[in-house]
Image (cartoon, rainbow, N blue to C red; front, side, top):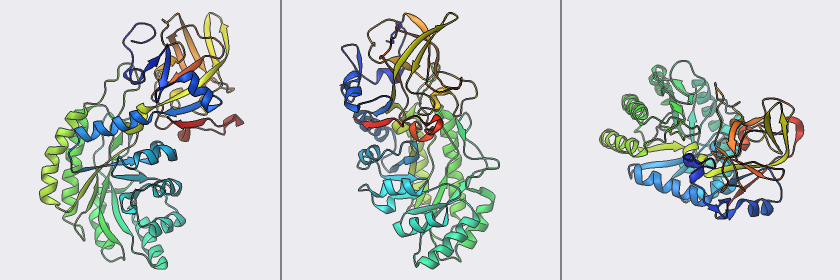
Length: 412
């Protein structure tokens, strides 16, 4: 139950309470704050990360490979923890590639996607021996030229912009005009040109959207992805050995959100895999997930530095804010602002006593972490916890804004 007696958000329920204090990694929040040495900070629970991978393994077909998209949370300790649990990593920059290659994961299980790869990044990727997801004809040609100059023969997969989209997704990554990937109708011609270049074709990457909580919609789009992949494979210059079908699995951020029915998604994938096994016997099918793996396993913790009332409203002013957790402020993808689940982490056993807004320390009204939420009465030095903060938190936020110190990150 939540502090006000209503049904708690599942993200809050995931963390135990010890003597009225939220615990992360088995450590009470007040003690963890002392260990970190300062607030604000992000804390990620290694046990929850392990359990999330176990849940995915139970639901997904045994021969579907699970990759972690490092962009969701590139903290090296998190990536190192996940390395023995997943089958590979997907990166979107040279620095993410370095983080991936610092783990025991073999380079051939790392792939690099994203538009606008620089010549330097292409050279690094070639030297590392990872799979490069090419996003345009020009990038393919630049990669081939760079490979000739470097004396390497890179392994490439074509990222395809499908002619359909993932409906009800938080962010559309396919369908229509996109900066991502090659339009599906252009891919056959591109495959013909690729066959003339000194590049090793390995397969395709199709990603239609992110943050989807509807199993039926995911099932539909995964079926379309397999249909398109099989059709394109007929025009490929070599057998498909690498088929990244993206992810898009969402997590519930807001009160009316229902968790994704992962078992239904897994059952559908098993049916689709029977077709892939027959048509593409050499293909490794990859599901690429970021937010779904780490999002619910982390919290953002900030300390109340002032409590004030203004014309009948209570404001808890903290030492954190949107410069650390932009998404929770509603300024990263929300059209209509809604609150992330929040709690007073050192008062978990107390009932809600007031309605308060949690704001940060920045000189802008956009710096709002929670708008008019029911909370126990909080005082100066209490700890506010923002849940669902394991993904797209620190590295997706404008940390340099107003020149406040960067928060710490810990894996507990």
